[in-house]
Image 1 (spheres, rainbow, N blue to C red):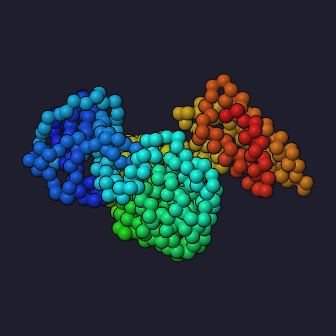
Image 2: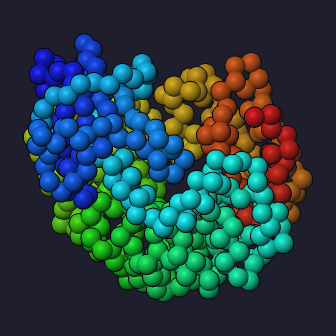
Image 3: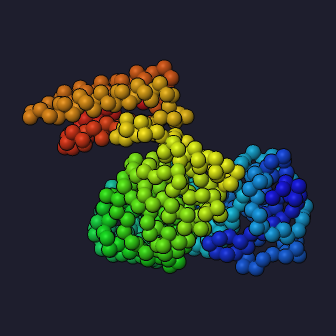
Length: 495
């Protein structure tokens, strides 16, 4: 939309995609390339008319921790939603200077406000009180805990015999477990604010969450055959070995649901969900996209991440005519001529490619320039690079804005030397774990030295360094000693 077609005070209407309801926003400031917009309090199945402007005001947000807040930000004019309907113009109310930047509004705040207003008033009141009055404690399972505790693990779940004790924790939003708790699902069915369940090694064949109010589920369990989801579910993450018989049943058959699968042996079960909106596959080693468009024809977002790995039949993506966002990372095995052309993806808005074949990346940059709202193509890899780095767990540091090139080079040399020494040690019939620990100390002190003058090791880099060492331990077959060796690294590291 040309910037001259926007005027201060203009009110536009859009339909929120999941519910189909109409919401409105107002233009309150216009710059050269950006405009400030603010959400209004209109939310209806009926498209607003100009006479409805008299009843509209700024949307006041009170859900969760918010207290009568309003939301407004700068957004790029060139990405203004062209399908927005101009309703009319009304006076702009004075506000503080806008310092926030973001995308154009999509109705999520209006939708969230409606949901929050439908929750039981007693649970909302208790949530607000616990959130605004810090440092209060309650007794749960004989132990003193903050009443604003937001997450439970097995340590606390095992303390109680009656889950009604957890009603003392009104801000509770997350449960993490690796055990079977008979009271857990009934508890979730009466707690409206708990939004996330993480269940490792679930032993059930059937898991019925349909009467809960969960929004996110992360689960593993080789015996799982059927998972029933509630209307509220937004994201499901599957980890570990999956049954070929696994089916996921959703009220809208996956519409407006995100499914993330951490692949094992490149196996993707046919879980159903024919109206799935978002699919993200990680840990890919060798995988074909054949059949993905027929199983999930309505995908809006497709994310693919290699271990690294090879992806085949990439031209299948061209059949996803509704696709708006495509991301790929650490994937190879396809040519520049196989990658979909812009005309085949007419709805595509965001294209992010990271660590892909160099010839593909160069062609994509040329073809998709000015064809999408966001185009990111980084870390293009040559055949020579792949040959040298395919098994290098620190390869994603190459080209990182956070890791200097010289640090990356020395880090890889350090990892390779450590790997060589430990694998050599592991060949001996009487492996001396004390010697392996000595190599581990050399490894960690090497990174201490690299980080000494110009510090670059933050949380993500620290995890990478430890994961890279664990890969060596696993390759050497020293599984039973893994933790005691890692403990040496934790003791000696300065990062």
